[in-house]
Length: 639
Image (tube, rainbow, N blue to C red; front, side, top):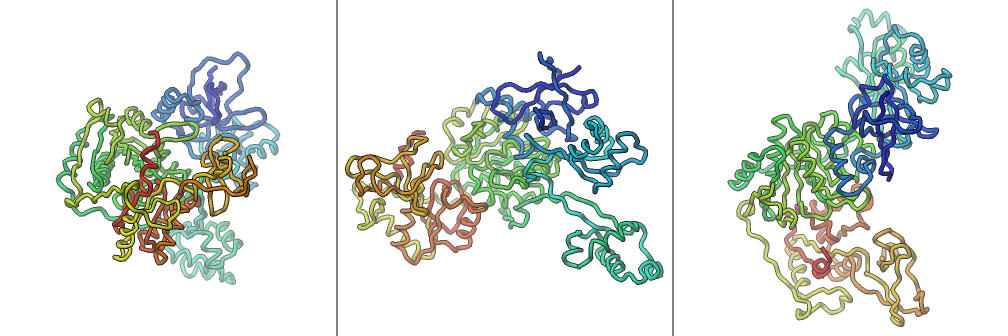
């Protein structure tokens, strides 16, 4: 009798033990998804260990293993174990971060009929016959209820001989594969005489047959019905006559498939070529710090090392710190590697993430691009992991399981024998300390085409004059004149203020009371659109109070400046300028980052202002002036 440990996406530190039926012994292996009974429900979990001791109480059986290969590879499972130990997180939550939403937990098991062998009899034959009468698809519960017996063992045997497919469908059905039904001609082509005979008085059937023949290949069933006007009855009649075949094919949902790609530079500089060669000399499992100044061409070095991995049949992962950077990075990587690229980040829908995950797990795509969660991409035969802007705090995950994607990337690279490439113009102290101790430093000291670095002007607000009438915003005359001159030349401006909202907090003039979040005990930030006070930790919000809650004083003063107030000031100072604001309040909608940056690239925006998300290495060639408003705000944060 064999037993296995199964983990669920729950904050518990101990796995659950289930008995492994003999019929599933070769399918229940570490990393495999399994359907198990939990109370009166079927729940999908991940096997973490096999051959474990049995529990003191009687163990329940694993019901079915729905996947042909393990969902979590052995190196990824070992990475999850490392995360659980290093970060003190439950193993189930670490594994949850590695799978798309809906891939496990409470789910519905469905059965889909395939090409069933005609010789199957007994209960298995009864099940296949029943499914055939119900359009070839039904839930496991419905089938067991109809045949009045447990069917898990029968289903496992039928799945082995590919007589049916077992699908695990989450309640939302979001991550289920997108399937399209295609229609194609079957058998030998009919002669004109045969058509005249067979389709006498059936002009629509003949028209359908000849439309498929003219297409020279399969046509979507939806196209035949919606565009060409053929009824379901006409299509079914030709299918029953064996003249056409209807097949269901999986259609990956790729939101970046229609996006334009960026061409690669025509030439490689000597410094870039030297860096590429130095990284290529690394042993499997080794790492390098690509220390290159801004504009030195680090991206081209990344792509050439990824190309080397692909040429040897390996895969690659490219991480960026911010979702807003993903479209630009994807366009460049797709420009180099075409459809070999899959995108993984939290801004995609559950179905899009699931499709990208499946393509990578099957080996249909070889390169994964995304934010920190893409470090878990199931890339086959991983050869290189690139962490761009490795110093960025965006690689820290702030919810359970809490992890740093750069550290996880280093562990995974070691476990998989992949090269690790960390790139930055301002490396973190952690990374600098590792140079010479397992990390090789590779330099790119000059910008491409020897372009000079931009001049930097420090404005001491204690002594430099401020523009009158700008309220609480520390708007200096130097920045005001620079913005005016840049706009007059038809160029673009970027303004950084790392504080969202309108004002930092409200304060009573009489007693000094500051409204705080009832959950987090921090001051509430004032917003004007909409007019609320909001907690930037838990998102608690309330209407702006008209009077002090402590003393009843009506007049309250707003302290501090946020991006909303800066936007209002710039609009008043430069009424002819077209503005765009980029912070958490304006980028909550799907593809908001891309819409804003796209408008800037198309020159539909003159001034882009926002929080730290606009300072993540975005490539905006027409921006010739960058203003950091209240630089002390970032300099005095504990880091």
